[in-house]
Image 1 (cartoon, rainbow, N blue to C red):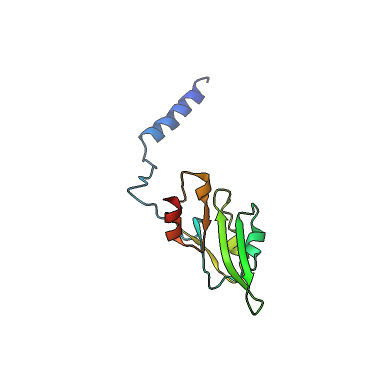
Image 2: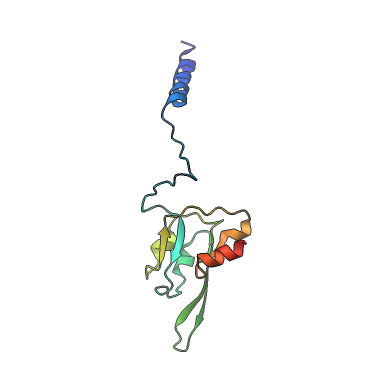
Length: 134
């Protein structure tokens, strides 16, 4: 009676100890991510109208949009920064975009050594991120 819990616990431990391994060998083998996975954000600059709905929809206010007005009084996007260190990856920004300019990429390698490097400029592209980190 008293040893049933112990035996049940040991049987579970035995099963996981000698069962199939679930660990992925990450650097050598990349995981196959589903298409709906939330990794990093990609901005289509030509489609973006700098309306600010994505920044308003973000619960943590991690999106910073900079824009200016041109000669025809239309907004033109000049800066689009995202603080990935505070991002919840909820997807509300992508859902709220009326022009379908913001998309998820299946890239989850967002690790950096310093907190300051978690802020990315989506207009600058990946070349600027490499320069910034060097």
